Each structure stands twice: as structure tokens, then as C-alpha cells.
Length: 83
Image (cartoon, rainbow, N blue to C red; front, top):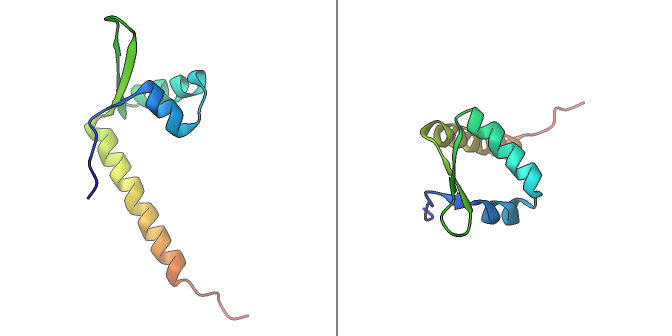
């Protein structure tokens, strides 16, 4: 299994998603309001924003990946009905 990070900074998330600052900020605010992520803003020195999944967020992400894997398996074994 791969290495798991406990948090990610805003600029990293912006780079890997390709979202604008405003768009990413809006998505993170929505996820924070739903208690999927926690956003921490540091004001010491250079401002830095870090984001981490909550316990609820980890559960939701794991459930989502499981559904995607089941969908992939169903698609792999699917055969079209005969006409």
C-alpha cells in the first residue's frame, strides 16, 4: 500500500487539481462545511493553508473508491444482451 499523507497544502492541491485559487477555495469551503475536510490557516511568517480529511471524510473517500472498484469490475465482466 502507498504512503499516506496526513495533510496537503493549498498550493499542492491547486497544482494537482488544476483548479484556480478561487475555485479550489470554494470547493474546500463546501467540503469543510460538510465536515469532510478540515482547513487550517497559519499566519506565522508566510501564510500557509493546509487541508486534511476528517474521519468522516476518510470513510466517505473509502466508500467512494469501493463503489468505483465494483463498477469497474461490473464493466469488465459485462456482456451485452443478445438482440
